Image: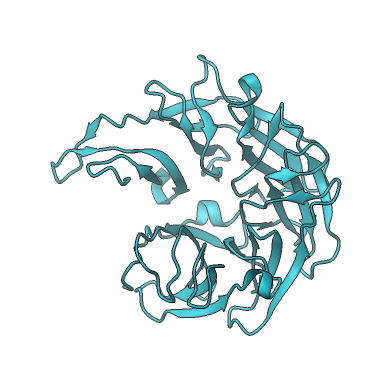
Length: 334
C-alpha cells in the first residue's frame, strides 16, 4: 500500500453499479502526501479491468491542479495517468471524480469548469466542454458525471443557470450536443453538489443543498433524461421527517429504494441516515448520528461513532457502509 493512502474498499457493489457504467467502490482521503505530491479528497471508481482509477483534488509535482491515477487493489502498480495544469493547459484543474463510460474511457468534471474525457492509458485527453458562465449557462460542477440509458453524460453545476442556483446538463461522449436540461430555482431545490443517480430507466435522481422547509434545508429531486418531469421527491427539514442538509449522493437499494445521509437534523442535530422510496413515500430516518454515543463492535472496544458523513455505499447482504469526516475517538472521523 502506498504511504499516505488508505482505501475504504467495498466489494461486489452490484446493486449500485448496475445503475451506472462503473463501480463506485470507495473513497480515499489523504492527510499526508499522495504519490506525486498530490493531496486532498480522492474519489475512486473501479474499472472493468479491476483497477482503481482516481482523482486527487489538488497537487501534482508540477503544480497544484490535481491528477488522475491508477492503482491496483493490492495498493501496488501505481501510475500517474494525467496531471492537470489548469490555466496553463486550459484543462480545468481540481477534478471531482471519475466514471468509466461504456466505451472504456474515463469521464469527469473539474472545479476549473470543464468536463473531460481520458483514456485509461493517459495518452488521450480531451476537454469536452468549458462552462463559460454565460447567461443561462451552468458553473461550478461540484460532482462528477454519470452515463444515462442513452449513452450520454449527465451532471450538475452548483451555480449558474437562469436563476443562479445551478443546472442539470447533458452532453454526448464526444463533447457535442451540450444542453441544459433544468435550471434550479433555489426555493424548491438548488445548488446540487453530489453526483446524480441514473437508474437505467431514463430517470435521474439527486440531492441539493438548497430547498426544503424554509428554502435552505435541502431536497431530493428527480428529472427525466429528456429534461421533463422535474419534481421534488422530498423536502428536508421539519420535525415530522428529521434530517436536513443532504451530504452524500443517493445510492439504490436492492428493491428500488434510495438511501442517503444528512449532516444536520435528527435527534442530536448531527444528521441521519435515511431511506426513501422512488415515489417519494416512506421517508424514514434509519439512524441518528450521536457524536457522544459509543458503539461496541465485536472487539468489545467502545468507539464514538462520529458525524459529518461524506460517503455512503451499498454492499452485499443489505449492508450500508459509510465514512464520517468528524468525531470518533480521535476526532478525525469514523
